[in-house]
Length: 173
Image 1 (cartoon, rainbow, N blue to C red):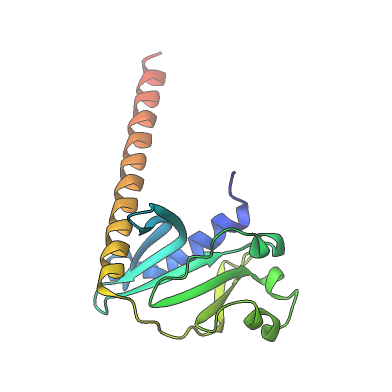
Image 2 (image 1 turned 30 degrees about the horizontal axis):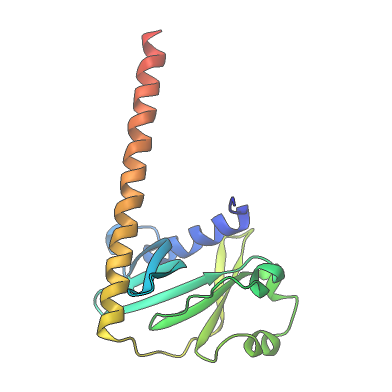
């Protein structure tokens, strides 16, 4: 299923937050749609909508993006397995109920980030509580993040090569 424009903007807002205007000053490293394997024996795989890692602090942040109430209430897994975990929702969805009602529908340790899609800005409506993450889980999260970044880089490289070839063919005509 194709992502909505809102989802794409929210991913971009989270991505830009990692380093602001200068990627060389990144405090955290992260990306969208990270597949994690939770149980090796049963091969339980879940997707973290957005995962970031702060190498200096050895901390992971998991972001679950929901753009509609139906999306939020769906049976799809909400993967909150990081040191800090967030529900990320657009402002319009956030305003459909009170902060108290939102808090009642998520685990106590999950924070809430609200994104103003039009302005491409965000604010924290509820701070998350820090969670302990085992060394084994951190190892798995690091592997998952690196694997996803590798696949995304490979896809970008192939897309770039295809575009260059297309431009060369067009100039030869």
